[in-house]
Image 1 (spheres, rainbow, N blue to C red):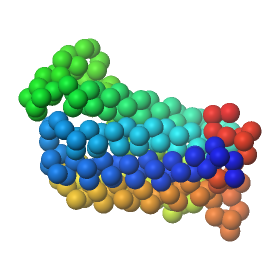
Image 2: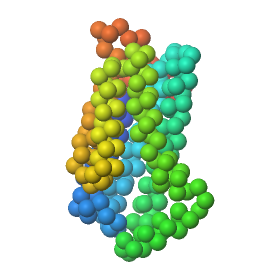
Image 3: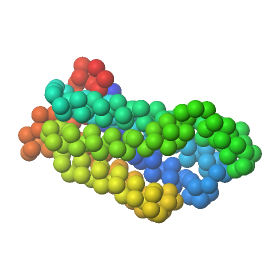
Image 4: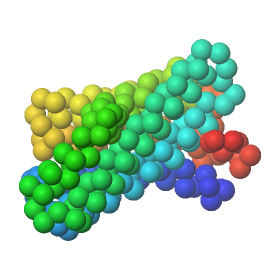
Length: 220
């Protein structure tokens, strides 16, 4: 297996795993604004996780080749939205890490965030709509790939279910809810299955991420 393909395959596990790991690292401080090792570790892990999500998104794009027509447009739009959202999350996490390193307490951290959000466009792009778009683009991309038999239907369903459970947990029970962790775990399972590509028995036309040749790697 080409090392680049191995790295792409690993991203299907590493991204969601980092999402859940960061959530667990925030439990000792109850998810609050508390500068220190727990805050720094959680946000550093999340930062690495979102970088892996970018790799994973490009790998999924690679599975779409040589798709054409409306489905290809849907893939490209979903990929573009996902990468934009990843960039927004990376920016937010970089700010969070800066605040954690420079602020003495939670109040000082809030002051840093207020200063950053004062810039036009920062609030919606980096803190509200932008970071959430990934969780709409990923299931959309998975569904298009499943319909085109590039991944299994089960993988797309489990991924979408994980995102739904995660969203319900966040907005109904709060980000500290165990339901959020359940959603992350489901999403982790779904993306792990996505990385395996179509089932051989299904006669899919795509390849697993691991089988992508060097010349057909995502982004080429």
